[in-house]
Length: 510
Image 1 (cartoon, rainbow, N blue to C red):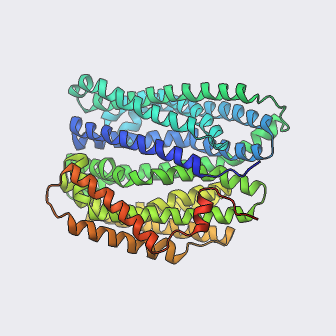
Image 2: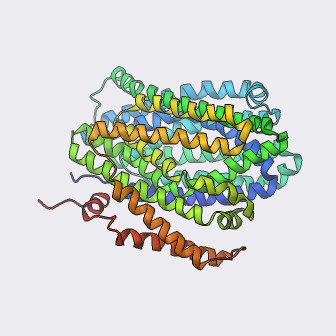
Image 3: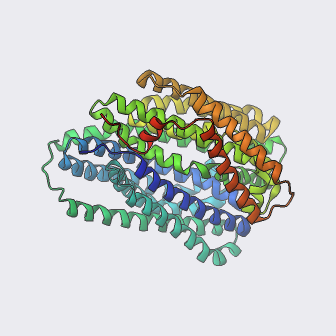
């Protein structure tokens, strides 16, 4: 059997991520116009709870099924795969029903005590109905990702986002006039319906796939052994995700409070929080769509290579991942640093938001590197390392928020966030070097992209010097800068034939 490559799955998931992120921008723009920065801030308070429930019920099982499916598939044990999926669904549903029940019953206490805003209670209660569908759907997605069949997860992702947008569009006119409480409920209703329809799609796709591929082989693993194998892998993964979500939730709850200590009133603090987490951060995350897709595809790719002890394949994959990550990260940083005000004007019709986007631009290389490095280490089974790494990273950020945000405001958060990410990326790079002996090439991964990004940015910035950008002119400038960036990378010799052959899955001739 020919060696599978990550390129096809990455491209499919990248396309899906880009589509959903662009759709999400329309959603964000509509929300910002309908309910303003304060309303987005309230919605952003609810999102960490949603992410926390996903971390408890779904995150560990998705990656576990992906890894175990890839491992058993390369060994030809299709019967084991079916047993793994079934037991994972049962376990995740048991957990999700408990979490869903707790969220529904204690929504008022969570809103008042944890979020410090009673208006969030109704939305939290509504959100509880999405959790079981989210958990079961994540198990089915893990199965398809483990087989490196990215089409089903990609389509379900687009379907889910489309349903969310359509729901808020249809309900906004009814609920927004009733106040922010009900406006957030309209958005959460989109989440619930999106999770339900996405689950239905992946479940039907799984049953159809099993019948078509005739996956009827008898399992070699006993139910007890399968359950132990799932829990051994899923528990550390879930613990890592839960800890990260709890710490992230702590960060998101602290930011508005610390901004009030900085001197802002409650409305200003929630508006600043909404601008930061609901408007500026989604912008800098947009180019990372391809890296998120690559990170998901890397888990089964590395798992397969580890299962059959193909060290050379692991080293090549890690090396190309480094190159791809830093080229995208530095290119995105150059783009946002050159056009911060223009991008915010085009997307949100607010040029002043560019003052917040500009410093965030320089965090792109660290932020994007975290994504792919975690994908590589997850594929190698380094869940306990990632757990410790996330704890320390979040502790650095929370310390900065707690001690310095009342004194310096948003800049203190940005500096502490950057410090945490720098530690995370540095420790992950060291761990990968210990495991694989591979370290990013200083010239190809850092110096050449920096030179190419600076040169392309300076050229386009010199040619385009207008205070209020035309949308058409901006898009042409954006395209020209991207093309110039690639041209300069080629001129500097950043892309070697060996790296391109590995990335596109071409084998060397013997």
